[in-house]
Structures are given as structure tokens and as C-alpha cells.
Amino acid sequence: MLSSTPRRRFPALGAASIATAALAALLLPAPAASAAPAVSAPAGIVAPAAVSAPALAAEGDPAATVGVATRPADDGGRPDGRSRFTFAADPGQTVTDRVLVGNTGSARQDFTVYATDAFNDAEGELALLPTDAVPTSVGSWVRFDDGGARVQFSLEPQEVRLLTFTVAVPADATPGDHVGGVVASVIESGAQVNVDRRVATSIFARVSGDLQPQLSLTSYEASYEGDWWNPFTGQVRLHYTVTNPGNVALAANLTSGVGTWFGVPVTGEQGGGIPMVLPGNTATYDYAVGGVGQWLYLNPHTVLNPFVESPDASMQLVVAPITRDAVTFAMPWTVLILALLAGALVVIVRWRRRRDETRAQEWMDFVARNAADDAAALVGARADGS
Image 1: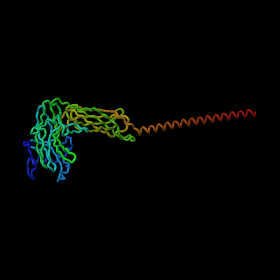
Image 2: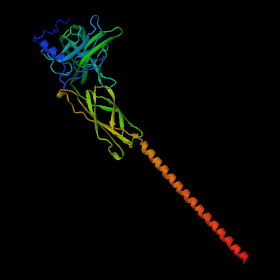
Image 3: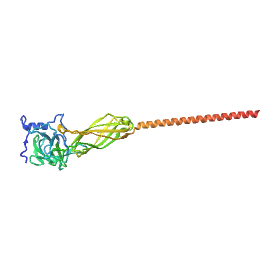
Image 4: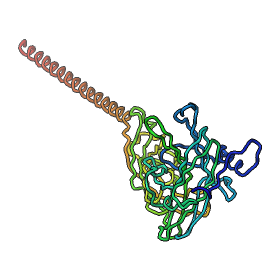
């Protein structure tokens, strides 16, 4: 079944061959400038890299490890430095490419290689359909040399195999980006559960036609977070949902800031970004704008600048930015309490002043009345004595 697929074994030390170069490039870490983190997860698109994790102890080999690696390859079977498969094709066109699959572990492993579709998970990251899910997009367009959608084989430790595959774009394929991945899977058998260790190299297939690159902020909410007793520091938490209603996969840079009364800015512009959102997908994110005081009225805003995240310059497109703002409130409790205390103090002082003035006036009236009474009595006594 795989007789037409080249199978290569790691040669003895000092031997020079294409397999040696391919395996070395496949297994050695990529340069820091272009390397992507290796991930071993049930569902996720990762940059081509080796994954090595402790396996369940095999009988007689407690130190056995599982290692899976994939890399795009050129016509000669060598890794060609690409981080993913990128195609631009017309409906009905077929594209051929190659992938190297290697066993970087310490024991013989059974591999299953297949293609599937990608989507945005709950965190907004790119992920792959579960192993048993049936792809309907680019994952269903991939066939290997034998015409099948999956190939299975075994590799000894440090052995590599070159697989050729085709991507047959259907004649009725919709224009735009179709994203998936070529997956190499190894099943670890455990006492209670089996672990599916998958490594994928992503596929970005752009079908020609009417391209509609756009993102939209379908919701945008803001709330203030900070210590109630400190009116000078805090942050505005932005909670927003990004939807891709177009047909082009887009990432975005974002710039956020906060203003207050009469548009006066209370922070500088703060930058961030969101990962790629696939066509028809939605992702929700949180972003915190720091250094925001308790100005009571706050007006946070965000500008989203979408772009095509691709190393291929021919894939770039001009996309209009999106701007949204919201209103939230940050009650300056300390200032309010101090103002209330100051107001209460003023009221008390004025009340005591009025009370003292009233008492003084009453005393003066009392003294005046007594003086008048004394004067009247004195006058009466004099009159009686005369």
C-alpha cells in the first residue's frame, strides 16, 4: 500500500545522504528567529516541530519516550524552511506537496497521517477538528500517494518518511481562505486511557474569486477594576467579540485607550493583538488598559487593524480598520468620602456658628431685658421715695 512512498532509515554515523540531511533538519530545533513552540495536544495547529513527551512505561523499557515531528519538504525530500503549507489555486486545480514525518522518540511508533480542518477554539486560538471528526473543507481535499485520505505506517526511533500528497480543490469551492492541517498522530496505550499525540503543519489554501477581507466587533463592553480607596490607579477591562464575516483569514493589531470628560485622554494608547480568526468563526477576548484613575466618567475605545498573517507577500490584502468605544464609570469613593466629610464639617461649623450667634443674641436680649427691668425698678423706687 505504501510501496510508492520512500521509506528512509537513519544511516550510520558519517554516512552522507538525503535522508541524513532531512532527518537532521527535521529533528533539530529551528533557529530562534523562526521557530514556533512545539505543542502536543488533542486538537491544535502547531508549527512543524518535534514533540517529545514521556510515554507510559513500556514493558521492559520504563524510559520509553514518544516523539513526533513534521516539516514541509522540497522536491529533494529536504525540509525547505517553510512553517506551513500555503497554496493559491483556482477551483478545480490540483496542487502537490510533500511532508516529512519523523519519529524522534526512543521506541518504535505507529503513525497515522491525515488532513483535517481548522477552527477557532473558545480561547480564540487555531485548533483542529477531533481525530474522529469528518472534515468538510480543505481537510477533505487532501489525498496521499495511494489515493487515500489517511496513511498508516511504523517508524523506528530516529527514522523519517517522506509523504507526497495532493490538494484537489473542488470545482465548486467557494472563494477565500480554507484552513486546516496535515496531522501526524501517535496513540499511546495506557492502563486506563489512550493518549492521542498529534503534531500538525497547517494548510492555508486560498481559492481565487471574490475576496472579502473583513472583521467586525460584534460586542464591546468595558468595566473598571481597581482599589476603591486609591483614586489614582486602576484599569479598564475590555471584553469584546470579534467575528469574521468575510472569506479571508485575518489576524489584527489593536490600539486601545481611555478618555474622560470632554474627550480628555487619561491614558496613552496601548497596543495589543489578536490571533487569526478564520472565515465564519467568532472569538471573544479580554484586554486590560492600565493606569486609569477614578474619573467617574470613562470612555474607552479600541481600533482594530486587521491584516493577513502570511509569510507570502502575494497573500496580503488591504483591510479597513474597525473602531468601537463604550462608556463605563469609576466612582472615586475616596474623593467622595472626603467631600462628604468636608461637607459635613462645613455644615457642623455653620450650625455651631448659628447656634452660638443665637445664644449670644439670646444672652444679649436677656441682659438688655434685665437692664431695662432694673432701670424701671430704680425709677419706680425714686418716685416712691419722693
